[in-house]
Length: 496
Picture 1 (cartoon, rainbow, N blue to C red):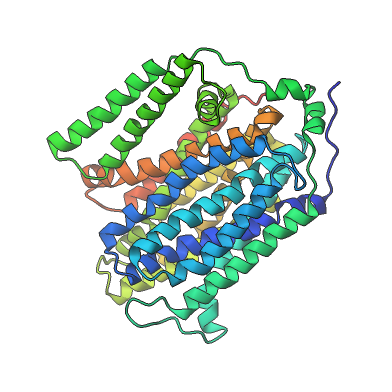
Picture 2 (tube, one colour):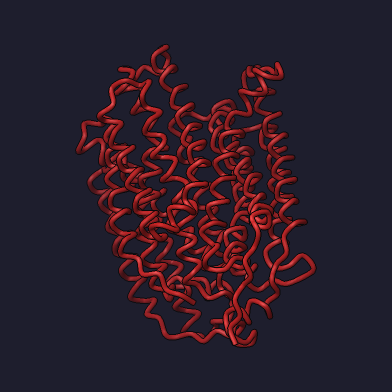
């Protein structure tokens, strides 16, 4: 007989999500300072996007693997918590070593290691909320994660500034040397990450596989066995290969933008993966983790497929904002493209403040989201928040006074907090308990793919349709948010 998971208290949910504060410290320090470290060690501006490709590709590979393994783990620390611990140790060591990298290529390698380590810790956190909370409380749990993400992003992003202005630590250094303010910010962030994740490990209990099976109304033996239906991987590989090869031929033959090589490589790599999966299926070697992850991609629940569309347009909009806001504000609102001018640097500094502001508003939005869910349901609440984000990005083209640009950050904050919480709540309510981890890892595909798409095609769109004016990248992002808002109302939330 199926049992219901008990309601958890506010502080139990708080303790379960507190580790995300530390994870966000790691992400915020990485996002805010790694390009600075690369440039200090001799990277040219044109090289930085290629160096940054490590981050999304690492998440694309690591998260489903960790999800698959954590679904099948049970020991003294539980199911997800061993991965919290191992990932936190590796991430802390990476944060201590990264600002001491002696050369550019060592720093680039450390970015791979650091991002992989953060993903080892982060992926099971998403699954833990689905494991421990019942359907009614999952939206609250993911909103709590959004709250800690907002707080962590604001504080960690300001850490180098705080080190200089509050503690008198130098923010300059000899050529080729990382400033002490950045080093101490990374050291402090490493300690915070380890302690925050450690708090969750010590203060949170997990349900055993037997208990989770009872909650799902299944036998443990049923959960651990997986039967496979035949998948036509050859057909999928042919389609993917034709698309990837066509893009590659067009780039070479028509001398298109080099960014499209990335898009071509994505399709051709997927083609290779599908061919390997087809070979394993033909041989009957379908018990391994590699095959099962690819099989789960093709057999994901309908709700997950529908949410994938929502995620694609949501994250495409976010990446448009992250990539182009600085150039959009400096050129459109401050009237300059000269990177050495005072106006440009004033505009760039203001963008940093705006980004801190939307993370702060996201922390406040996380408090409001459970109330919105109670009144509008998860789909309605997410739709409204995505519309807030759409209006915010579109308003950048209408607002001429840069001093008023903090107003759209309210809408961005609500959209950001909602994107980090409600899709996961809708998804977790539709997943089998014994595959919560692997499907959460696969769900990350629909964050990485729009990131790679944005890096590949946004520049092409601006150059060919909008006279290379970056303000229109934010307009494209606003339209993308609108498409996501329409798509979320088509999502059918299934119950397990």
